[in-house]
Picture 1 (cartoon, rainbow, N blue to C red):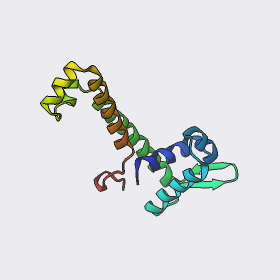
Picture 2 (picture 1 turned 180 degrees about the vertical axis):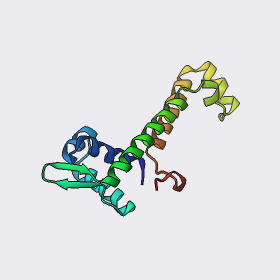
Picture 3 (picture 1 turned 135 degrees about the vertical axis):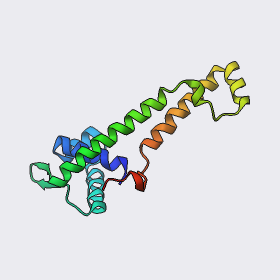
Length: 135
């Protein structure tokens, strides 16, 4: 189970349609469907009832959807908290020499800030550790 699967599952559940959710998420519908099926396979349960008019949540799917929304909100809050950290805390793990260069070259500071945001964004998409898994 990973954050991308949870996000895809929540969007499908909220919208009630794989094709419409795929358009909102800007992904191919088969890829979206595949990720949700992988999630169902990993959990050994059906999360959605598929019919010709869209999808509805199963009872277990409804429970997972609530957990997923909370998890995704928590990850977003954590990322915003880290992004809002004072700059001296963000630089704590850099070398003193880099601090000197930042003071004399503002573009170095901007580049470091970009890399911090990119690093956080990459970790938003990483897999949950076993202690974070639902179940």
